[in-house]
Amino acid sequence: MNKSNLLAKRIFFWSAVYGIVVLFPLYFLEASLGQAFPPAGNKPEQYYGFIGVALAWQLAFFIISSDVHRYRKLILPAIAEKFLSAGAVIVLYFLDRVALETLAPSIIDLVIGGLFVLAYRHSAPGLDQATNSPQNDA
Image (cartoon, rainbow, N blue to C red; front, side, top):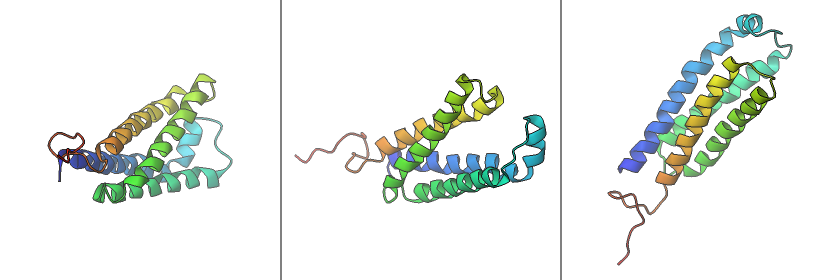
């Protein structure tokens, strides 16, 4: 395995681990988050649905990390997931609709999205293992 593949594999593996560590506890925090950030949500199906979809993406990140070249096309929606989610929260923050405590995790997702872009670029087929540049057929 070349260094680029290893980098992409690690980016997706550790992103999945981070996501599970951050997201799974939210299943047990609905009431306390409602008190800390009032008003409490009145749509529990959206709260738990978000957590479920986000955790499903963590599983996709594990799958991508298992074979970056095979699942390279899945990196594109993974990038979109990070940038669309983070972008929405950033806009909401500047519209004064979410608190700074909500913005911080979105900045982390923005960074992870950037790492996903890096992983996508470095996992392109035809990159030389040693130099990470296009191979010469001469």
